[in-house]
Length: 319
Ligand SMILES: Nc1ncnc2c1ncn2[C@@H]1O[C@H](COP(=O)(O)OP(=O)(O)OP(=O)(O)O)[C@@H](O)[C@H]1O
Ligand SMILES: [Mg+2]
Image 1 (cartoon, rainbow, N blue to C red):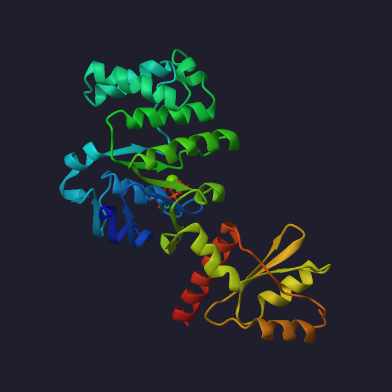
Image 2 (cartoon, protein in one colour):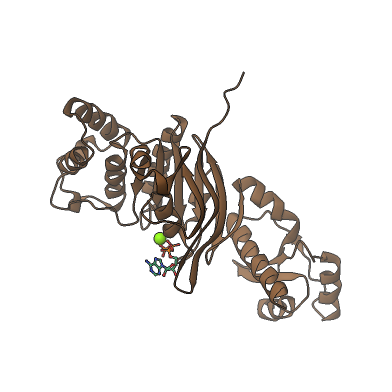
């Protein structure tokens, strides 16, 4: 019989505000053991605030946050033993070498020396950093610095990893390298909760949460998110992009219409969409023969459509 999956992270109605600003609004998310969950959102969306609450560095104003089955705010010490938290600006010592940074964090975690030595060999090999072990951290490339930060985060053998934009500003090749390591860790049973503003990274997660301005818009697998939006996303080829966009944006049932390369991408409201109406309205406006071409939406399309849908809903509620 298959072993029951274990929930390792559980946010229920978790909220946090700063003065008048609702930074995180009533989040419901569960993440299973061994899963890679990505929180995707633009600057200021509330990603770090969510992670800080999960890591016990900040309490929610309301709601519950459980990690490894424990309510975080009531079990800080026990939770800290189970988690690794790699902050958006992780504290490496630039004048210390790779090894010395790892010694420092092992001492901080109280790791016995034989265990430390064993793990260091394993991690340096895993990250292909062995040849750089005597290089000062300040002289490492961006990607290597992030790998060193990850190794330091892993030294006390956490079961749950919280990574805050771990590859921000890192070149695409090194990012891919970093994600191969994350995939291996998750295959070994590690639960990973990662924030990102990179869509290619979101695509590598088992499930993602799309968030914007403190609101969680949708949670699902990248493939399901793309498939669920496919009927409502279209490409339009036109020589009059500006004119067509202007007209389309004003039409009922249109969530958004954005330039995408040489085309326009049109996003219809699933609750109020009518592609046939839009086609005939375009014809009436003299845009014939403009075709709405079916589009296999990217996560970027999904994100644009999701945010626009959320804003359209909020407007209807306010009206
Ligand atoms: N300690 C704080 N006091 C007041 N406002 C805060 C505090 N921390 C965060 N904020 C605000 O809360 C909102 C969410 O911030 P947060 O850092 O969680 O976003 P983020 O998604 O991590 O953004 P980024 O991509 O820039 O790291 C922002 O508007 C931010 O200015
Ligand atoms: Mg942040």
